[in-house]
Amino acid sequence: MIENRIYNFAAGPSMLPEPVLLKARDQLLNYEGSGMSVMEMSHRSKVYDDIITQCQAELRKVMNIPDDYDVLFLQGGASGMFAAIPLNIAPNSTADYVISGNFANNAYKEAKKYLKDIRVAASTEAENYVRIPRQDELVLNPDADYVHVCFNNTIFGTTYHYIPDTGKVPLVADMSSSILSEPVDVSKFGMIYAGVQKNMAPAGFAVVIVRHDLIGHKSPLCPKIWDFALQVEKNSMINTPPTYPIYICKLVLEWIMETGGLEAMKKRNEEKAALLYDYLDSTDFYKATADKADRSLMNVTFRTGDNDLDAKFVKESIAHGFSNLKGHRLVGGMRASIYNAMPKEGVEALIDFMKDFEKNNG
Ligand SMILES: *Cc1c(COP(=O)(O)O)cnc(C)c1O
Image 1 (cartoon, rainbow, N blue to C red):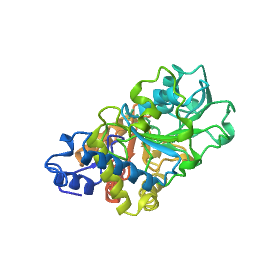
Image 2 (image 1 turned 180 degrees about the vertical axis):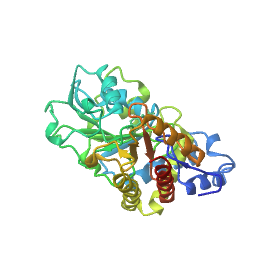
Image 3 (image 1 turned 135 degrees about the vertical axis):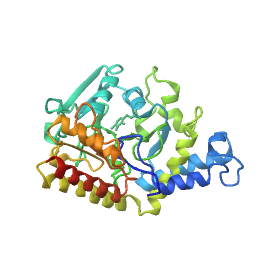
Image 4 (image 1 turned 30 degrees about the vertical axis):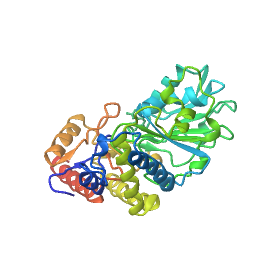
């Protein structure tokens, strides 16, 4: 870690890899001899066209995206896509939603505005989303246009360790908080999307990876800038794209390739998460809040069982140079988001602090 930087456990926006920040610093005032910052460039210039094209190509390489999928960079974040999805890929105005957390529910509520027949395939709301619905719990409509899932539940700290089988119905996954954390078989999905501010780039856009045959059937209500087919045609540049975040995204993807790709990333992420979960399981002082079988590698939620003690933990953690360990209000307690850019040393330092806090308060 560079001096004066701290371990930031924020759920998003969150840490970016230091090599990426350093490279951006080096290129800040004069990008590759262009005489200007990427921030100052016309999105219609040749030099910027190369950046966005390379970013897309790099994502295809890193995620091994098959050729029959389109890759788009769209504004409005993941929440914008909650509306854009039903407006683009529901020609029969019907879809199934699996409700595994707050964002899954927000996606459902937004889509409900646009669809004639929207159904809940399963929900774990009654258990305050401590787990992911199992395959055998899914009640699927074979005539649905798609099935929507939230793959990693950022707030609750749960994730799918299986890919739901939806038969011939395309599976659509919000991967905002787990994209690029491990390899995924893109061909198992009709569409994958993510707000970039957790694991890809600074806030400013959503990545959409969509099977080509699913697009081109948009609702007449669909805003032009979210028309997937038109954006494919215009290389995500119907209007001015978020030029700087897309450039940083390119640097992040290059960093992933340079550090061994997604297999190596997965190994590092499993190691980091295991350190934290093994410690949580070894003590009675803290309790992990998510069901063991469905634990997220990215967002680790835990509590002491005493709200005052949780508040004290958060306060003291800040004094010790950690930030953003307070849990989301819907869960309480603490949450450590340990995305790709969080070094193993950050997790080890957190565990040392947790042990001391336990000693002093247990
Ligand atoms: C953060 C997050 C969102 C919301 O993303 P925005 O880009 O802020 O709209 C949606 N889904 C999941 C899973 C998230 O983690």
